[in-house]
Length: 385
Image 1 (cartoon, one colour):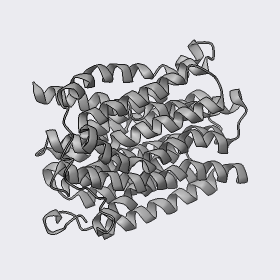
Image 2: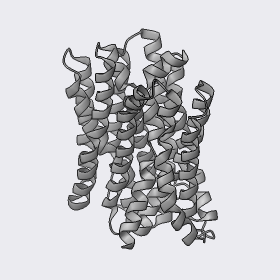
Image 3: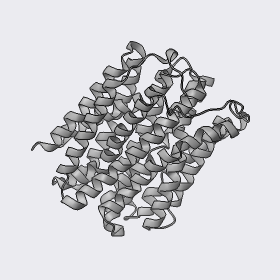
């Protein structure tokens, strides 16, 4: 029963890590028209939380040592919930930007600490990361798929459509309150923990996470506007974002399980990257956009759980997994945060998305290069320093 409780806690916590971003992404065109902002300004609503997720990730391990893993995760969920709920107070760009910042900080704490949570409660089952990844994907899919219908049924009430996702946080907080009360001691506060800044493998993980997240958030933010620019209807464009998100769920379930069973994470990293490469090439060809979205979703669905899994399988303790995750997410999200911003800038300059798609092709090629250079499965011989 305890394992089921911990799995539920993991699922509900991860469920809240994406709606504050994908609800905005699905509404990007409406936000631009309702608030009268440029594509570049609108892109900040997804860029800002991702940058925060990188900048503040190292703080997570320090808070965990001081207040305990479970209490810090509870605070993270609380911060995300408050930020989401505040979007219902006003229909202004200022509120959206402020809550994007606060939500990004909350996600930055939860991200690396959920890897520590898996390492702590499921030390022999790194494949449990699939629950983490799938839950995030489900949360992202719910927000991307239902925000527009909520917006339309509420007579174009933008604050309500964006703030209603705070309900997920309230549900998670009810369960996590028990964990936060039960675990009142900090985690190894006397043990100095440092980011593995000089560890080659940790640096490779960080670069990979950066290229991966740059692609993920660029596609999440702009797949619907790209579809609109290609002449599709707003409803079909929103549906494509939902398809892109939903297709990641079975992939995120299968890939970590297969890697956990067969090994060879490097092979699956490259295969998933090639899937993204094919999807981007399809976007440049005169053909329906749906096949491109499917290949992009398959690639993203496999790469993200593998990025979460690598620090868990390549380290020895929950604390070490937390520092490796914090470093990869710090550098990775900072890199990734510039992806949507860059796409918005290129579109504002050129008026079309072809040049931006070529830029994304270059990012995927760099990501494959990093993956080819990785030497995985040698954690016992390396020391994180």
